[in-house]
Length: 381
Image (cartoon, rainbow, N blue to C red; front, side):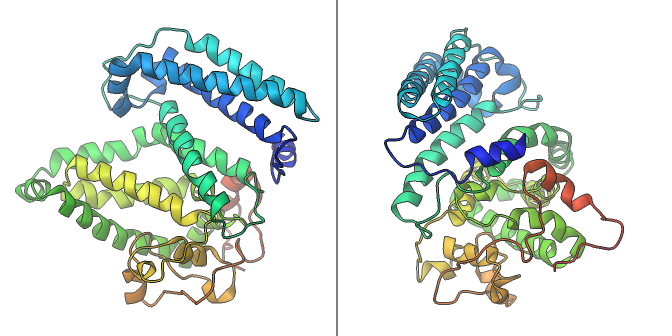
């Protein structure tokens, strides 16, 4: 089934006038509209607690936005059914739009639910996917590093599954892993030092979080490359052979949870203010997507101060000179200090793991690191 999906929907030529773009819009908006409509029906389970105040004050506006997306999806599906060589795609998009309209006609209730209740966060997934797609897809079309790379490139379906899992599945897993640690540390490490940290100006806390978290993630990232059994988990992230904004989501669940927990620990221990933490998370999340994107920006001076797409693309390169370089997530100064920087005067041109031994597909990549884990294998070829 997964192979069939990849064969049909990956490496697709979206030449205008053939109904393929409209089919993509119809199917994409249709599926997202169904997910958004389900949030209207099951807000306690499917919505993000931080976003629920918006539902109480802007319910009508949100419903109009939903039905606007449904109308666009239906119209795109209708057009595709007339132009596409396989009208079934357009018809499916129209059907999804109709289902979303029926589901979304229910009453939206914004319950007063404790923020630590189990939730999936479908609304967060839909919102971030729409915003990031609207920003990065045009950006990559206008300023591509690799002009021949397609929007629906090889591997995008796998990466979309990772994107969904990182926004929905990890929320559920975090409830039983990261959140208990946060609750424990918040309860037992309430000190004058933490109060002093939280009382600092927010801009200063933001900078401190960047420096503190980045030095820790530098060494975690380096360990993921240089410790053989850890590399198998991180190799999943490096298996993509075509870089774009969606490639940043390809992270094995073990790595994702481990890096989030260890990265958040200093934030919990130091007691930074929640507003500074949210600002950091939004900024760094957007930055992580940007440095994976298929853009040709060089930033000659800035690239030595802040990690840029050029800097991080070299980290993903399978060219021999670039292997195990540029570990920093945000501050290249750490690579400079520990002599792991590689920034030549040209852009990276080849990606993926050396030997291309990581399997395709979400399930195969999940199982991959565990195969032979206790039999001594796991070194990079």
